[in-house]
Length: 274
Image (cartoon, rainbow, N blue to C red; front, side, top):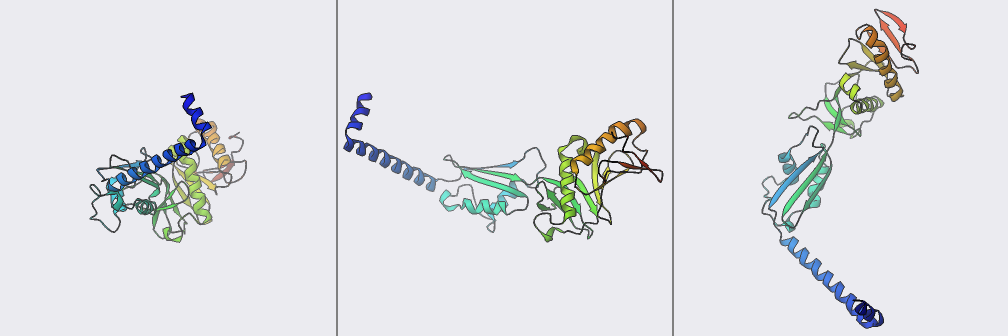
């Protein structure tokens, strides 16, 4: 083997011949593979919708219908790969409001693999016009789907923004709402405890818990982490000892303090949360 390598190193002409042969072999191989792909027929279609653990607004049939587009009678299984416009199919999928990202590929066995990353809602909005839509983790607005209902926090009250106003959350109120909802979705305690957000006439956001008869005055999403930290401390150090139904409202709107309303009287409860 060393002699062969040395031979080609010492003989530049044969070295050129060798590399030319290798290049020719690669070109011919690519042409053969390309020809095989062009004559390849789709034998099977598999659809994967991610994340698999979350509720999907789409199923396999809906995905297939989207990629067929304006040709609902299109027959995919048995079709030649050269007659299928994969790039256009991916674009059609990613134009769907429920889809964040799509990838379509066909292997040499004829299997078409469709992978779809669905948008994950964290908030369902009912605006003051009675219109409903979802907001995803990145603030993208998703229309409601009558066939599926995601179990997420609901927001209502003085919300003026509609689905048609923009693709992403536009107003400060809606941005604050989905930031709060997203925070809750990542925390097991708050995900289980908060079921509704309400925007009052002063644009303050109120949190409605599942346990306890109180309302939480949150204000805006400013200082989000600090507000939830103080509130959780008040829950575990205060309400666990005196009862979760003692107060009508708990206000964490202001920096470094909690104000709890009890029987129509205001009591500064900031010391309790320390």
